[in-house]
Length: 339
Image 1: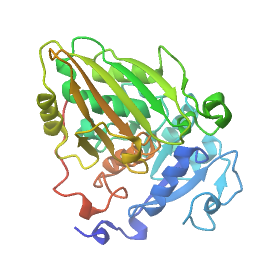
Image 2 (image 1 turned 180 degrees about the horizontal axis):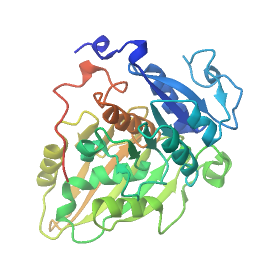
Image 3 (image 1 turned 90 degrees about the horizontal axis):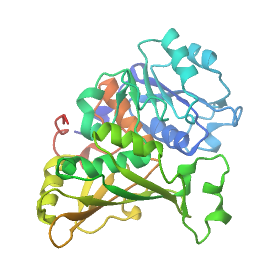
């Protein structure tokens, strides 16, 4: 299938609004929407950048596309086929309420944590729940760390007899664009900063959606983007690295955006891509203790590109449209996977 076959006419394109377009994730979303053959930007909402040209921040944007300061009711009245809310946690609800009143059938993808625990919203890890995401109108995009943890643990979750212990390191873009100690270059120089040592929202998120407890400690480092997760595992019965590897290959063998690697994956392997790499599977003597490593780009697979995967599914498009070229996809899209 050639790329032009995916293109639709200008009249048929879905108009996508990006709210919270100033942040690192918002900029990535605009980049993807602008090159997407089936989407076009309805508007880009950002209070802090209001009046500035999107083109000055995102290459290739139309010259007349400006960032706008749009409160919820005004934004909802502008009209869009779909909405991606890339707002800080706790700020999405006024937009959801306004959109629901004015355009109840519009698709909303919330990138924040506000609806990840809400049973009325579909939680969107496409590789695990794509059949549920298809044709949904309210989609909660998973967290960046949470995406990596779930995909790394899903194939072996039934083998574990103790909560996996997860050491996570993120680039400082994960702390957002608002200045803080977690994105302060001076604080991070030659340093590794641990934070929120217990009760992190991603720990609760993963525990809920995996149906098992996990123990997670996040850290931030001086690089800009990317996540590395080293996950310690305790098995109820003796396991082998080869046997675990087969489980991952069986689960993800048809997934273009999941790479299974023999060596522990590195952030540079996936930085700037919509993919996650999982590998470095090791089992200690006795077969009851193991380790697996995952790496992903927190701004893409951990946020923006996954939001587009979900939006593609909700709109009835191939979920990889606008993310990777059709020639790179190989076989037909993988069948839906149900827990």
